Amino acid sequence: MPHQKTSLPREVFCIFLVPLKFLRTIVASYGLCQRIDNAFVVHVSPVSLWEIARKVAKGVLKLPLEPQEWFARVKEQHNLTLVPLSEAVAFKAATLPEIHKDPADRFLIATAIENKLAIVTADNIIPQYGVECFC
Image (tube, rainbow, N blue to C red; front, side, top):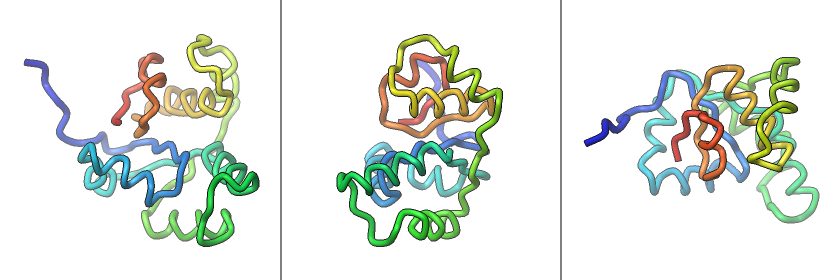
């Protein structure tokens, strides 16, 4: 019987494609909320913030506050760390195999690879890159 992980690594990389309350609902069904809350550091990419802001601007996503204020509160409440985009991430995103076509997701995958972070996501394509995922 394969060994199952019982906890997240000390540092994880959350992909926020939806507001935190919805992400928490998604991961709650997999028993990960408590493990995310207990992670030493939870990183978020500026790309995820851009995706949220775009969805709000298009009217696809409703937040109780403007995206910048909403994220500032979420960041403080959940002690999130913004992981910067770097040259290495940009070049890695450009050279990843063409498994995932979404440029934003390619940046998120490259961020996880370059920073050696696990990803919390429901996207079933991302694990094909060999990135440790919790979904």
